[in-house]
Image (cartoon, rainbow, N blue to C red; front, top):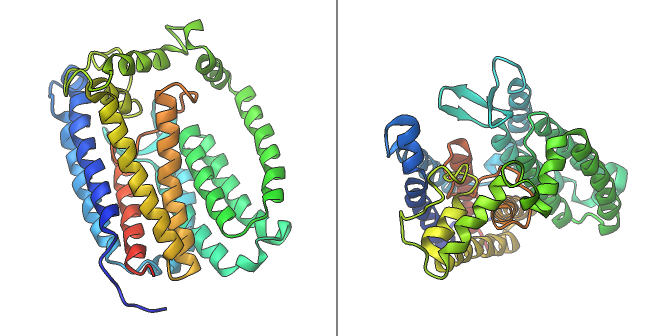
Length: 365
């Protein structure tokens, strides 16, 4: 492989930093009221976001300058560590329960989500595995089942927390890598039917998931219960109109809309900045995804191409699910908007992954 590096994709870097900057501003706007109510400090969430944004940008510039094929050497070890963390987080007394899910490790308000590490660990490992054994991928048993088995195991462990949103992103990004590597559509279609049956089983096994589905179809059936979040989100988006109520002028952040700084931050963006602000966010994500896919297409080797596809898939699937939930197209799943929502490990890991993507772009043909 040629080791001649060029400057990383400038459009990708600019779009990432712009989205991150908008995110920091909107986290403060969306969270100031809640932060003062809970902690007596308007800047509580802003300070946390700035800390993790700085750490994330530093990590991004490190991974942007580390040759991406180095990660291939550590893919197996990284995946094993990620699985170990998923086991540890399920142990009562060690894993921290937040929002009804035992998905955190940490002390007090600082913590990490092992499932976030698993998303990136799985992407790197599948890229390595399928780049080395790409000729087998058209075979159902020897080629397709091993990567699907690993993906299924990780998804199952994440669902034990439970965390359907993160599990869905992991599955979406993994399937995109597997499809890009050359898996047969017929095989994936048959497995899709099995997966659909399993999804129905997951819903039937937990009544609250069925509530979320029915609430998604008609949130006004239970406006103070299962449909509350969807309704309050739409109440935020509706008044925003074309130009919004103005930065900082949201009404729904006054304890009406749950999680305004995380899962439903796009609702606050639409309320304060209107259609123009929301469309700008979508255009910036579109630019990031387009440049990422261009990098995948022009990567100098199969590993780099599959790795880029996985990272772009992780970003795109998460954006689609989050905004789909916010505007009432999907059931509420509890997933953040990449680079914008308040977060610790999720924000840092996302910027780290984008750094890897930027490094691949340095070798693009």
